Length: 166
Image (tube, rainbow, N blue to C red):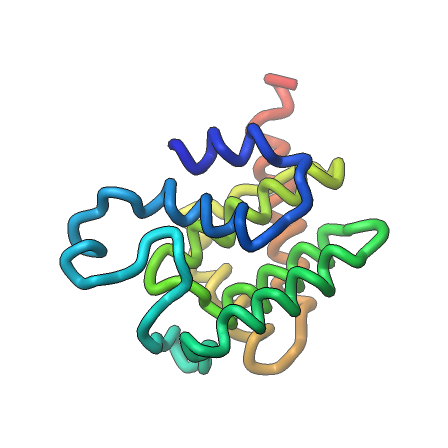
């Protein structure tokens, strides 16, 4: 809840390592398993990790890869949902934290949609496997169409769920 509230307070700010690390801190602060395992909270990972069959960045590569990703993304003049999807794929491939990358990545999607006047999306639990499949395909084949289509579908589902509240 703290992560979401923090995002609402700074959604207009440019996306930065500081913001992303803060989201992670709010997400994972006080989690016993992370403390017991020596996982850094609010800081980049200190051990290699693997996600499915995708090679993630090594701990030593993470700071440079994140800086490059953010620099490239923040240079965009008009951000689209497609740009956010591509950023998300690259972010999840870097996998900068020991744990909590997916949740942190999904709050970034929401933030960037709000910042760029794009109707946001929420990835529904019952469609998580479709999300993972689309993400994996994008990471392995550099083919973003499936994840972009998935984002548009989830955006429509979220809109249908909240349109009467707007």
